Image 1: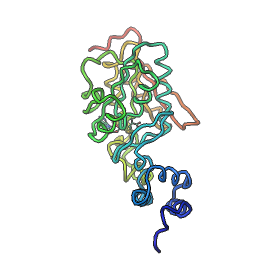
Image 2: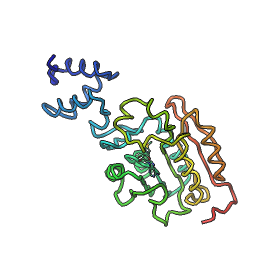
Image 3: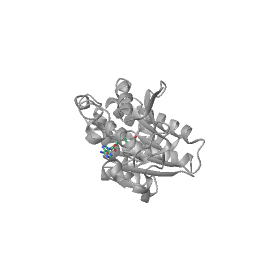
Length: 267
Ligand SMILES: C[S@@+](CC[C@H](N)C(=O)[O-])C[C@H]1O[C@@H](n2cnc3c(N)ncnc32)[C@H](O)[C@@H]1O
C-alpha cells in the first residue's frame, strides 16, 4: 500500500499511530512545525522506523528550557528534573556557585541550572565526542570537557564544586536488552549500561566525589528505585553522608552525598 500523503494531517497521524506513537496527534503537529514537504516525509519515515522524536525535532523541552539534542546522544528524561530541582534548592544560599554536570550527554542538567542561575559557573563533561559536541551547543563551549569522568575536569575545580550532578548510566547490563527500542537502538550503549549490577559508573563517581566537592558541596546522583539502597551504600562506602530523595510524579529517585563535616578530603 502506498504511504498516505504526509501533508495530509489525518494520514500523518494514522501513520504515526500505526507505528506505536501514543501521542500521535501531538507528534504530527511537532513534526509538521519542524519541517515541510519532502523534509517532513523523511522525518516521518525516520520516526516510524523508531528514531526518538526529540532527535528528529533537534530539541527537547526539559524543566522549562529548550535543550538541543543530537543523533546518538542520550535524550534527557523528564525524571532527571529531580536532580535539577535538588541542585537549585542546594544553590539557594550560595552566590557564584560552581556546578559540574558529569556524564552530561546533551548538557541538559547543566543547561537548566545555568539558565536559572546565571551567576553559576557551570562545567559539563562526557566521554563521548558526540555528547560533548551537543553539550557545547547548550552551554559555553569552553566549559564542556571531554574525558573519563573526573579526568575531564580542569584541575582548578578540585575542592570547589558546590553541586556535582551525575546521571551516570545505571541500567544493569542484562536489562539493557529489555529497554524500549528507542533507547536500545538509538542511544549509545555507554549512556545506558551501568555494568553487571548497574552501579559500575556510579561507584566511580562516588569514589571520586570528595576530592572535587567544596567542603559543603553536594553530590546528586540519579538512580533507579530498586537499586537505590545499593547507591546509598556505595556513597557511604566512599565516605560520604548519604540520603535519598524521591519524586513520585516524576518517578524519580536521587541519592544525595555530602562530605562529612570536619573530614579532610585529602587532595
Ligand atoms: C544516562 S546518560 C545521561 C546524560 C545526561 N546527563 C542526561 O541526564 O540527559 C549518561 C551519560 O554518561 C556518559 N558516560 C558514560 N560513562 C562515562 C564516563 N566514564 N565518563 C564520562 N561520561 C560517561 C555517557 O556518554 C552519557 O552521555
